Image 1: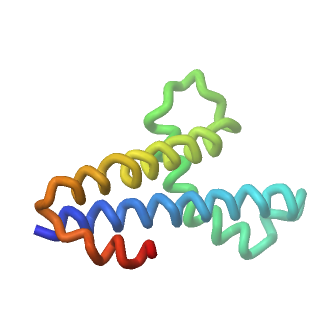
Image 2: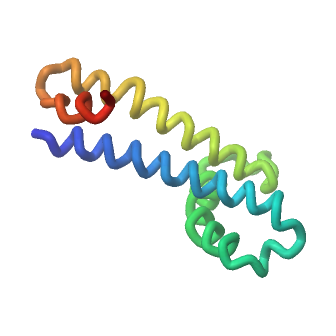
Length: 108
């Protein structure tokens, strides 16, 4: 029974992690300048975030420019996090089918 709750919490954590990787890539994009392709940390961020950017490119219409895809990815991840954190988790906990006491204890 707790499997669904665990999956929602894991998806929320993955959305948070992906968002942080995108923010790190953006920060290094600004700070590293033209030499960013030689920066090992920027390359790691690119390896982790490129699948997210490709997925965002796949779901967006072709009229969206490629340089705007990182912004679209951040917006999509934000919406995923909002849906999971502010709708799915409270709904699951309020239904009474799941024991959310461990989640509530960690928040306090």
